[in-house]
Image 1 (cartoon, rainbow, N blue to C red):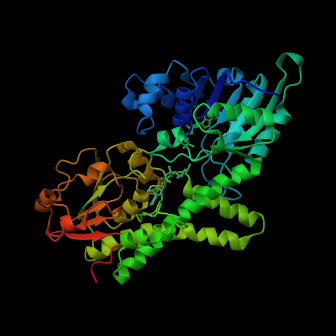
Image 2 (image 1 turned 45 degrees about the vertical axis):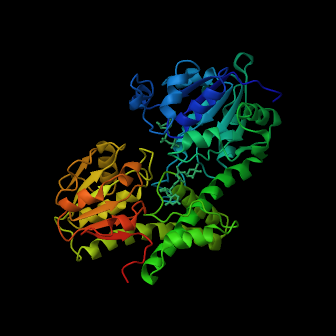
Amino acid sequence: MGSINIKSICCIGAGYVGGPTMAVIADNCPEIKITIVDLNKERIVLWNSNDLNKIPVFEPGLKEIIKKVRNKNLFFSTDVPNAISNADMIFISVNTPTKTKGIGAGRASDISWVEACTRQVAEYAIGETIVVEKSTIPVKTAEAIRSILMSCSKEDDQTKTSFSVLSNPEFLAEGTAINDLQNPDRILIGGDDQGSIDALKNIYLNWVPENQVITTNLWSSELSKLIANAFLAQRISSINSISALCEVTGANIEEVKKAIGLDSRIGSKFLNAGPGFGGSCFKKDLLNLTYLCEHFGLPEVSKYWEQVISINNWQQYRIYKTVINKLFGNVNKKKIVILGFSFKSDTNDTRESPAILICKNLLNEGANLFIHDPKVKKSQVEFELRNVGIDNNLNWIFTEKLEGIFDNADAILVLTEWGIYKEINWKSVNKVLRNPSWLFDTRRIIDPDIVNDYEFNFWQVGRGNDL
Ligand code: UDX
Ligand code: ADP
């Protein structure tokens, strides 16, 4: 394709990636008309809601941008065919969960949604169309997209179409998505058609410095996304494994973290010990990576990365076990307050949240859970717990308010590092707990010196203080 000036974009998938990404592009490129489409009618209704608190993705700064650009150059719709027909460029931003059935079940990504929407693109696109894969996908998906598009290309003169496929992985982290999109470390574009690469690059150059836009071949781009997430996840499993060692040796993970992070080769970011990583990407991408390595005859490499997932599962299990052990091996009918259900703070996303398995295990031991989260909905908690076999809500309740939640509690377990938990007045909480009681801080948000004088017992991940 020659030089292309993009005037109209369609984004398929109005989720955590598509919504914020298109909002930021719309804000920076007022001359481009962007339509985000989704099969999920309810989701589109919420994106179009007058009450901006109802938009389906909670992300700091997002609703302000939506207010500015919605119905000016950013539109939300369920009319997928029309949006595809009118677009010069189409972003595929649909979900790609881990397969639950068939070959590669539990490891490979299910790309049926990508395939379904690619077929729609093939059917409805008109003229020269650039297709950009944005979803987190297995390596070589772009090739599959290209094959489907080529085999479905229309030949008659009136509707002559041609496609080029680019990979443009998303590196935003939830909770900081707007800042990550506005000030990215880098933009990665994979492809082989220079005209299409330049068209996409020109969009980003509206706000990203040119030296931060890098181009590669399709496969390097797809693989780089998997590897970036694998390396990040590996850091968390590394620090979490050492948190356990700190607890038994009397070291303090915070001090170890500082000491190693000052080595510029290691760096200080992404070294917070916690309940294990969650979110829609890390586990899925690691599973994908291990599957890919095995497929290409590299079982040793596969096993190496598998260990990052094992440590993450173990960390969640270890935290649950610690709670049980400290409460004399018995939590039956004991009141445990769970602070935070989202997989990290500043997001309402609960996918793969460590809270899910920790709550499941505690519920199976007979505990009464009082679950709090400032942004997650009760229906979401219900959904996640049902998915792991907890199908009644007899012994857990969900609340969006902290008032009264600590009364007569046997234990409090901080699972998400929400800012409001850092403001809790532990002196007053101290008065209403049942004795002896425990405060478990898996996110290290509480200053041990502050709670030292209170009657409850205190445990923090990675802090070997009770030798
Ligand atoms: C991640 C990548 O960061 C992002 O680049 C990619 O596009 C998508 O996947 P996300 O999953 O949204 O983003 O959030 P991230 O901030 O990476 O956190 C992932 C998990 O790791 C969370 O559960 C978080 O609590 C945990 N984490 C993160 C730690 O336990 N310790 C840390 O130091 C950092
Ligand atoms: P992500 O975190 O990758 O953005 P989400 O699950 O939040 O994932 O969003 C993906 C969205 O894609 C969902 O809202 C889903 O309804 C939508 N979707 C999936 N397949 C299609 C399709 N063929 N056409 C339109 N939308 C689709």
